[in-house]
Length: 135
Image (cartoon, rainbow, N blue to C red; front, side):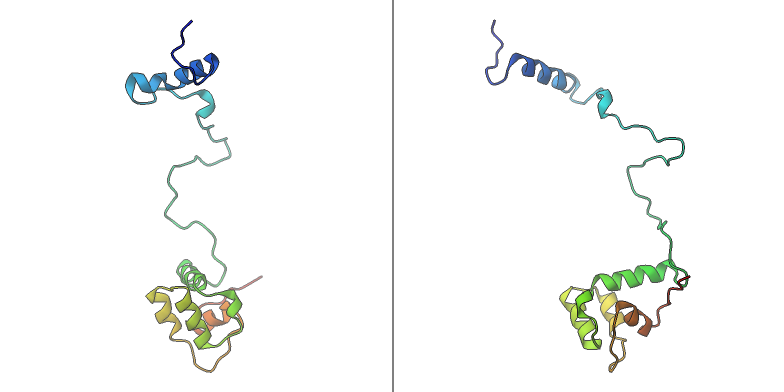
């Protein structure tokens, strides 16, 4: 019996032919195997979507609004935690090393000169940002 292929066994050749047959016929996968189809959501679960929701749905700490949380997060993203405690020049140096955007840099230049900052929250407070109110 001539199979036309000597690279694979007959079983593997048949399996590969079965998998590629829809593509050869139409150029598009016409059906998918049952195990490849996603399971539907359960009754108490939300329906899955392919794109994330652009609206921020997380909770914000009491005392802050979502815009402040976003601004503080962006600022903290460009400051190394290892610099604390530090002063204004240390904060600005860390921001420069981490390629902080102009909006963050201009915000940090408003920090007072002769003050030591122990944490990121101290920097945020010195800039007039809101304080989280913990229960």
